[in-house]
Length: 152
Image 1: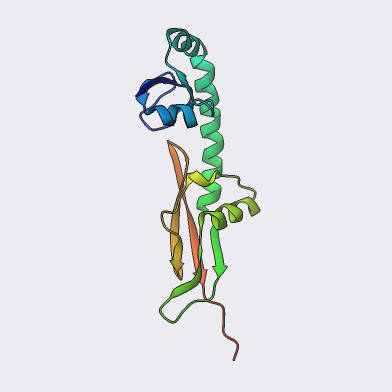
Image 2: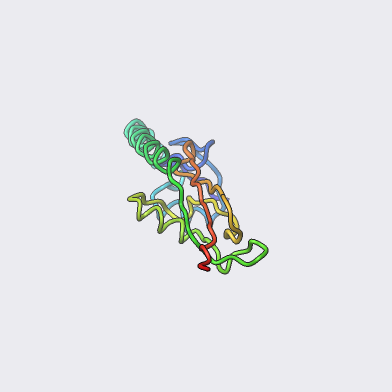
């Protein structure tokens, strides 16, 4: 385990300036390279405490922007026609990539890891997919899978 000091709110209980123990790989491969944390040395902790108010202000601005995006996503419905088997199962599926592409078409950029799909959508009908924009802000995208109209 490695002790790191957090530079931005990552989880609900990890505030800016918190010293937390994480697995070595998580710190080395994700938190430190992405600038979300630094190794918890006395100098790093002191430096972050001096910058804490500016980091918190930056986080508040980010939360405000994500709140606007959240309202936008809550008002959207992703409708797609996909061929469906007799039992309602799709010939194909809806994946995180499809959802991300739809949001980009709407002018909304979200990281794929924010989309909490679980397994791909493989049935027709209405679905909701949660999107975590920030540890304090989440929203849901409505997805409507339709069967193409058969022409007779």
